[in-house]
View 1 (tube, one colour):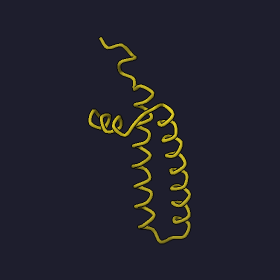
View 2: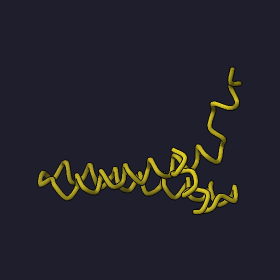
View 3: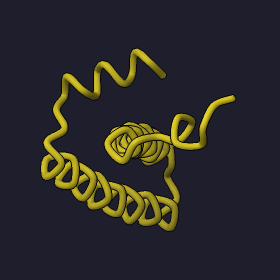
View 4: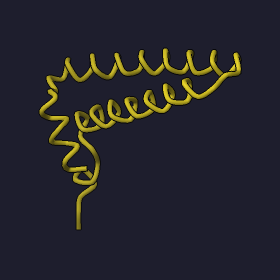
Length: 80
């Protein structure tokens, strides 16, 4: 029987996962921004992209403070 700690992500893994998720969300928001013509939707996507960029910067800063590296991210992506 697996212990709870073994099934949970480590803090570092959670940060790397969050970075990847935000990257995907930014890609979706940018693609949607390119497709819309309505001014209200354009504004909405601009605000969403800005918010996601700030979230991305936060997670990158946190990862750097934890000593996480791109090599660790690449290894984590292979596991997931």
